[in-house]
Image (cartoon, rainbow, N blue to C red; front, side, top):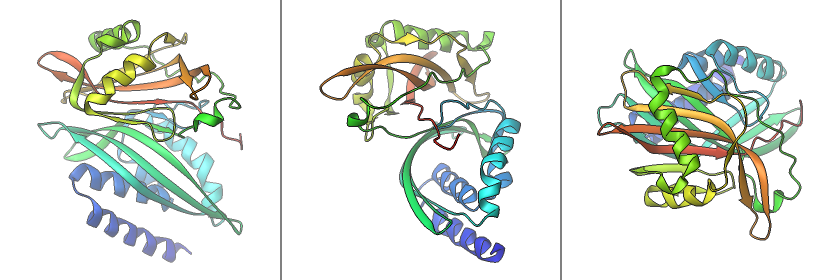
Amino acid sequence: MAAALHNDHVLSLALALLLATSDAEKFVRAHLADFAAGYLETWAASIDDDALLIPADPAEPLVSREAIVAELHNDFDPAFESGMALEIEPKRIVVRESRDGTAAWTATTMRYKVRFGGATFSFERRNTSLLHKKNDAWSVAVSNDSQGVRPDELVTLKIPRPSDVAPSPSADTRTVVAEFESSLRNPRSIRTTPNAFLVGALSGEELDGAAVAPYLARRLSNARLIPGAIRARIVSGTPYAFVATNAELDVSDGTSSYRLPHRILFIYERVLGRWRLAGGHISLGIPDPDR
């Protein structure tokens, strides 16, 4: 079994390198292949010590590499040891790299296929990550996974309040947090980079370029921060920063509107001394039925 998994992993990595069109995309594909093969320590070696992971489940934001590794081993080791086979197929990878090559952020849509106990099932996930170069290799500063929600599911979904993404921002993040808070008070004031890209809470919601600002002007109207910390970080040596928090937003199924707790991750780029929204991920936390 171990030899077969190793061979499958080698083939996955070779295919990843063949399909990738940029250095950052190669990293994303190889990172997913490591995870699918159960090489959790190898996967975790490419994330920051103080990385933030926002999983699809709203109950478990993880705020350090140590916590992320412990949670992954707890969740996945028993399944892999019992013979679970996991495939992760990237359906779409959007990559935006900084001009100086020090950072990149990615938006990936993935199809998971799980074979376990004689059964096979599949599901889709979306991920947005901010990467930066550390010792000439990519490392993950923040990563947000989510499940897209169909509009017709809104009426029956029971969305709990997401857990806080503490700690509170530090003094050096004051300006980017102020920009974020201003965008919630007056979403029509949001300024984006020309190549901005944002993933929304509903299935298929992907906004590119000039479409991002009008979408947020509508989506963030009447937004209310959920009490709890805003987590923010300027990624040292790069023009990028991120802000993550939870907020109540209105979302519509086309007939009715629902006010639900959302998770928000915004990625900012400093352009001519001002923070501009470069990317983002707005999601509804779907509880894990096995918890």
